[in-house]
Length: 505
Image (cartoon, rainbow, N blue to C red; front, side, top):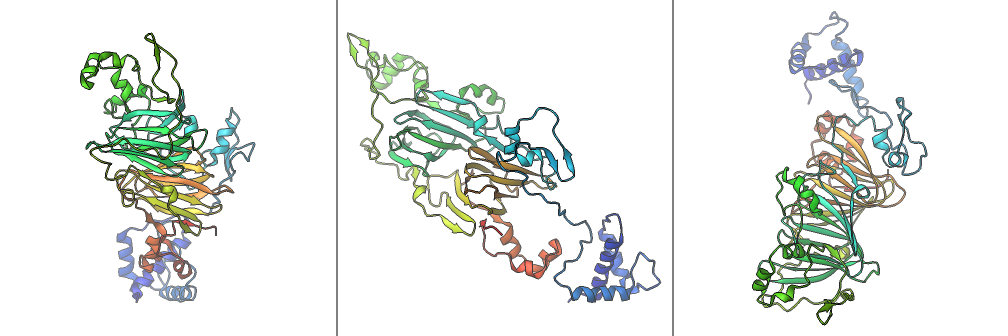
């Protein structure tokens, strides 16, 4: 039961707020004084203060209109300005920096293709505010490292400084091509985008591993584990995959190394250590002694790293002259690892995510893979999400871990909220990388007429998120009403289980 004095005080504030032209902020002292004096309010009080009878009348009227929320006593209502996306990808030949009555046309040079892809940067919603760092990077803007047999392009803090905790590489191998034997000081996690890849590794106990993964599958190598990658011929074009590393300073390109030293990143930390690069920088007599063979056995080792290269046999020789290398067939899917007296690794380095059934939701689907199902993956977790046209990944946040996002198909819209009135909206297309710092509120809305599919990737062993909908549904209703002025009907629609992906309204 609300006391009469408190009801009168609330009504006084309501009346004053409704009648005052400027917005008024009430302090705790003011409210206390109002409560203390509420029983002595009379009709003779100044016109800026309402009488007890009018207060009582207001309370009675309010009780008959419970569905109508009261005005906030301290701040104005949030804006009702329309803030939908203004144009779709390549749909407006003349995008302009105008939203409603704000902005103006562009009179100078304009990159129309970029503006078509980023309507919420050119004409941001009026709800955007503050200074959230750039949280979008298209792999299409990354420098591409072209090799015989494939290519690789990367995203790291050099191109998206906000992404301090993770970096990514998009890599392509032709059928049979090899990403050479190497290892990292960081963990390596991968999602196969197309084709199949045979992976091999040996752990610190001398146990080996060999397996083939296909589109939608994962692999994970802990820091320091030597491994290799080779595309099979399941797809005659080879394979393409996404690599994610649990350090934002990681670089696949050694030319970045000197710069990263100034960021306290050591040699070898942000770049894979390659077998051929190491061998080329050790005296051959030392190599021969290490393997207990004649030094001539190493006459044909490369003089620099191979990185990506086509598979081939050792060159045959006639009279000591090396002939051309002969290409070999890509590896079969059922290839077996060499016999190992130490046995196989206890936990596989791959996970067949493509064979996991997705959880179907009202607006799409989700698959989650973390260390609870992929035991070796102790520093990377993933959610593969689909969002149907008109649907959205609900408003949520992740308690302690950053989110590195990769868009596979469709188009998405994300507003990132970082507290203190900081919010910015971004638009994403296939091949784009997004990043959301830990605990920053966000959603992902499908803005296309096809299914949006993307990966949420986290530097953690366990996937976690907090649903705004569930949080409010499990909070005492009066508290929710006090904050948001919601009516009972709206409160009844809150979900006590996470919607995750919400269907069209």
